[in-house]
Image 1 (cartoon, rainbow, N blue to C red):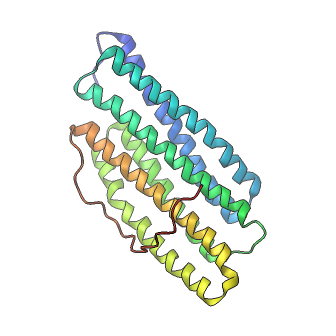
Image 2: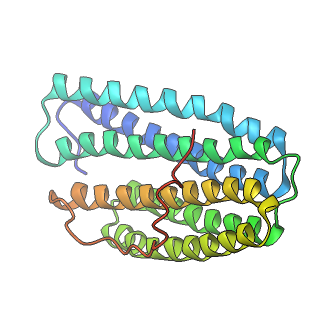
Image 3: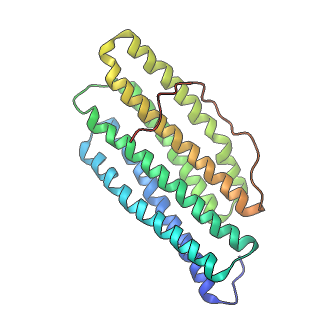
Amino acid sequence: MPGHIVSSYDTDLEDLRRQISEMGGVAEKMTGEATLALARQDESLAQAVILADKRLDALQREIEEKAVLLIAKRQPMAVDLRETISAIRVSGDLERIGDLAKNVAKRVTAIADQSPAQKIVLGVRHMSDLAEGQLKDVLDAYASADLKAAHDVWERDGEIDALYNSLFRELLTYMMEDPRNISFCTHLLFCAKNVERIGDHTTNIAETIHYLATGEIFMGDRPKNDSSNYATVAPGA
C-alpha cells in the first residue's frame, strides 16, 4: 500500500501487522503442540501450551487497544479503515484459536491415566495438521493481501469437517462396544471438535481478507461437511 503523508501512520499500521504475525506464530505453535501432546500423552508439553495462551491473550488486547486508538487519532477511511478493523477481527480469531488449542491441552491431563486408541488419537492429530496448514496459509494470505489464497483456504475447510464426521462415528462405535471406553472417547470427541472449530476460525480469517481486499462482506455458503448433530460436543474449558 502507498505510504501516508504522516509517516507515523505507516508505523502504526506496520505495528499492527507485526503483532498479528506474532499472534499467528504463537497460535500455529499452540495448535501443533496441543495435539502432539495428546498423541504422546505429554503432560509437560500440554502445560506449555496452556501457559502460551497468556501471551496470545495479551497480544490480542494490545492489538485491539492500538487499533481503537488508531481510529480515534487518525480517523482512517477506505482501505486504511478496513485494515484497522480487519486487524481487530483477525486478532479475535487468533485469540479464540489459542483458547481451543488450550482446551485440547487440558484434555491431555484428563486422560493421562487411560489408554486411548492410538488410531483415533492419530486421527485427531491429522485433523490438527490440516487445521495448522490452513492457519499458516491464511496468515500468509493476510500478510500478502492474497485474495485467491484466502479463497483457497475457505474452500478447504470442508476437509476438516469430513474428517471430524468420520472420527465422530468411530468414537461412538468404540463407546457402544464397551462402556469402559466412554470416558476417554468423550475427551477425544471434545478434542476433535475443538480442532474442527480451529478450522472454522481460519475460514473467518479468510472472509476477513476478502473484506479487506474488496470492501465487501463475503456472502458465500461455507463448505460445511459436519453432519454429527451432536449438540453436547462443544469446545470445553
